[in-house]
Amino acid sequence: MTASVDITDYRPNLKQREAHESTAPFLLYGGAVGGGKSYWLCMDALRLCLAWNHNVVGIYRWEFASFKSTTFATMQETILGRYGGFVAEHNQNDKWIRLKNGSLIRYGGLKPSESASADILKVAKSLELNAIYLDEATDVPQKVFNFLGTRLGRVRCQWAATGEWERPSGRLRCTCNPEICYLKTIFIDSPRPGHQFIRSTWKDNAANLPEDFEQMAFGHMSKEWRARYRDGDWTAATDVDVLLPPELLLRAVRTSLPAVGEVELGVDVASAGDDRSSVFKRVGPRAELLWAGHEPNILVLSAKVMAYADRIKPRTIKVDAVGLGEGVWRDLEREGYPVVPMVGGASARDESRNFRNQRAEIYWGFRERLQEGKADLPDYPELIQELGTIRYSQSASGQTVQIESKKEIKKRLGHSPDLADGCVYCYAYGEPEFTAVAY
Figure (cartoon, rainbow, N blue to C red):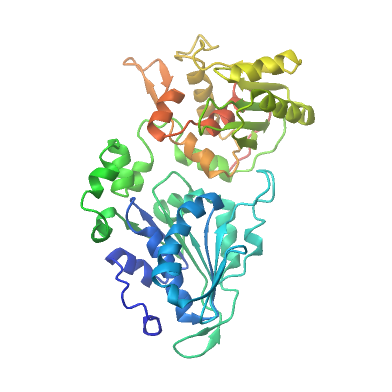
């Protein structure tokens, strides 16, 4: 391949070179911040397009907004910048780059523009490619990831070294930092056939980083975060005191339980800044994200919840009634909706069990549901990551259970667990109204 690729000044580090040379159909190149993952991804796409005339590949993230501010900046540095001499045309409206040898690089976001209830595969179904490159693949739902394999090896192109026309073997290349998600399971914990994992750390890419990079990037981090984001340690993606073990969360995503039973809504109301409000629906064991977004106007948010309630007819609407959420609760109550306030600091309902407060009680109840296989969660990576990072503690006697507060989580993670809280609210104090299905 390299004989026909004139990129003589590109010097990949040892791990990047190993990833370039991989022949595995599915490759996860993941680990620490600063490991050169995105740079490798763009260069691998370029090398593949130069090795085959009229090749077609795609570079994507889940959200296009994230792609523009991260991956596309690396593409501008590499494909459109340093190696822009290979480019014949760039169509920013349709999001493709055509090289002088006829190869095409498509790019953008895989998430459909419609609401969360739209066909999650709509964008993926339109792809006809030989290779797909996913930057920060942990953001991509597993259903989409699994489907992408069907879109590979679909274009005949010309091997530049021999002039032969054929369909290259399809390849899916992913980069990401260590997170609690399905990728950890299928690439690291129990690797599937044809799946290869290459771990990178910032030290592998130290020659391309400032001398003070380690201190500037990781000096402020906790021990656990340094293990994850400095050392690329995937075992650190789960804290020892995590409340909801990742294997239980992923099982709840993979399973399919009957949507039979009373309908409940869970509503978390964002406080301010970048936090998001969320609305979840639960029918029996099955939860669904109806909406998540920024809505600072409480009257507008209340009207949105009322519209869902008018259509869905829930038995109860459980609303975060602290801070701005109290306004939503009062609005719904005033209009006669079956609203129940969720107040994390209030006393637990069940006095026979030693929960520090209502927050501990409802989260522990959700934990027990997961343990019993009585929850069916949506395939939404952000939700699973939020749920999987919440910690708990017990008193010295081992009796009183306490769940870390929103304030503590936001300080540690940089954002509030808005999706996690909305989801757990829709399960709160609800009895399972179905017979669990064996896995």
